Image (cartoon, rainbow, N blue to C red):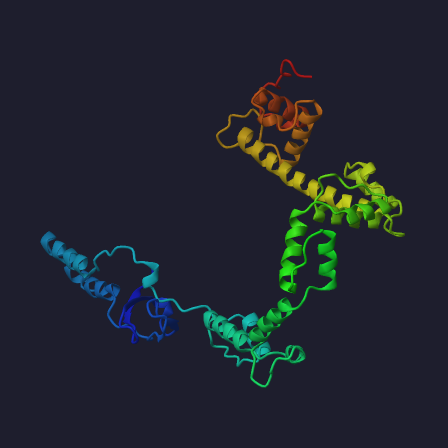
Length: 375
């Protein structure tokens, strides 16, 4: 058990408890967050040292009277420290973790001076400071000069970015913005920033436009009546892929075989790009189903063959339980039949296990009979 030593912070004067394993290290005060050099030697004798001094006299008193022995143990008891309430974590001084290699490389990339002895928090603060004070790039200065800004005074990268954004937002709307707003049949604002916000709002709230429907019809596709602008854009992209000279070709033989293997519907894979997307969806569903089935196996083993179950079978392996659950589904007992409250699932489980793995039946037990009312 490690011993805690008390030290006093030279900066704020607070008393701090320091575990023995941190002696000789440097850490930050939990009260004022200033660095402290923890001394190598403790500032007081530990209770263990006091107790060992008393125990050294044990050999002298072992043959004396009961009273003498009682006095001896009282001395030991008095040498032990009083029981203190659990200390709060904030009262412990713990050296902070050193800076990571990634942080040090980032500091170097930002043009800072790398101090390998700094801790993680100090490195993080330095990175923030370097980012905040990093000068504007040559590209930013050229753009500001082109917009008539006096670049003789110094700019930080952050200041230049904000100024460029303000200047850009104050300019007239772009041709693309104007075209889209005309398509939405709405008024055109004076600035580019206002036009940008209005375009985003309309994209998210408006239904499909006439030009979108005309484009979809030209590609041989149909747009649902209540489709939004963004939904219609997605559909148009799909129609364009359907008409692509390569992606629009019939699915490859390998794609067809994979869809059949995954239990998919070939009608949903009319061309190559749709077949590829469909395979991704099927694999994702199969992976999810696999995880769910593994949970079913674990649950069935715990419920029917756990330590508190009086099963007539030795606990099956996961492989056997997988076959048992599939067997029940094939018999028409339904999905998750092993937990269906409308079924006598204990009898069904015994019968299914014996059917799949009869050798798991414990010695001295009769084989289970087929439950009544099942196929």
